[in-house]
Amino acid sequence: MDVLKKVPVREQDAQERAHNFEEVCLGYNKEEAMAEASRCLNCKNAQCVKGCPVSISIPDFIKEVKEGNFEEAYNVIAQSSSLPAVCGRVCPQESQCEGKCIRGIKGEAISIGKLERFVADWAFENNIKPSVKAEKKGKKVAVIGSGPSGLSCAGDLAKMGYDVTVFEALHELGGVLVYGIPEFRLPKEKVVKKEIENVKALGVKFEKNTIIGKSFTIDELMDKYGFEAVYIGSGAGLPKFMGIPGENANGVFSANEYLTRSNLMKAFRESETPIMVGKKVVVVGGGNVAMDAARTALRLGSEVHVVYRRSEEELPARVEEVHHAKEEGIIFNLLTNPTEILSDENGWVRGIRCIKMELGEPDESGRRSPVEIPGSEFEIECDVVIMSLGTSPNPLISSTTKGLEINRRKCIVTDETTGQTSKEGVFAGGDAVTGAATVILAMGAGRAAAKGIDEFLSSKGN
Image (cartoon, rainbow, N blue to C red):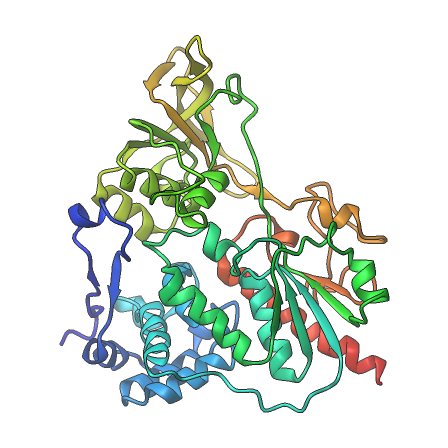
């Protein structure tokens, strides 16, 4: 075995998976996981832990995998993460834990994400559940939103002994995990529902079809229903558009709507909420959500083009997702920016007008700013356009809660360490605070807020 190289992970063949919604990555078996774990240097000053937003004791769990102690490995992970099977699949490990792995300096980093996924899946198969050891505190906490941030906060609070109720606006639990991320990346029955069952096993209660700001306000939860603290983990579900001519044409979708129809409503099957299957689809954007939308459209039978205004080096999507998209046959039109969506006499999309770009000087984030090349306009024929330009928080909660400060981006303002908002007893985190970001960063915010809530309620005494 070459210790400098990762144990390869098995995947569905690209030509087969391009026509189904089954999971692409097949994961490690026991022998592969133990072999990969044996590559770990078990560093005393583990940089990988510093790269993990939820601070999993990575060398400790990998050591247990190496020795075949999979239940012990799960217990190590469960101390820090309520959603290991999710994180093992969708976290950008290459820029976080694996990006700091010492083994990666002279070889390939340890496949930390794939090992975490293996351990979590093994725990599912063997019915291993996280446990609560803390005494009940007799204090009620409300969590708004059952996405990754809310689930992490709820799970940690339950482990501390709090009586936690999660309020979810939709008819299914999981937030972005169920409506945003496709089945081929994150199976719902096999993974998401089981992770939520584990949170329920900690004693967390869930109320679906409850829209905070309409069903109840935060003030009512605290003043009328006895919740001593509230965590807002409602995400960022309000899509952004470019503001170019033609965006109101029939056949223009936000990635949010397109993915929700497919993932949550199962519109790729027989459905009461069908999805428009275009012959040729253009996805505007270059992030993970854009890749998800593009790969979904491909599986529905469309020819798919991704249009992005920067070069491949600047694509914000995970390298693995871009690689999978290319393998499956998605076409990338890079250094290209839309200027107008074209429609026919009946108002249906018939194409998109674009202009070629070149990279100029770096912008404030350090990325080189794209600049239009005069006279380089061209058109791409298509009948569906999917805009994947990010999302912002829905203003419903902030507009119905007295004393809750928001910034110019409509995000809730919090203390970065504790998640405390401008309203006493109300905490927030995840996309509702940062705008659209990653699952693991939302989880990290949920964990930090749980600690902040515990400190706040403890300071109040009985």
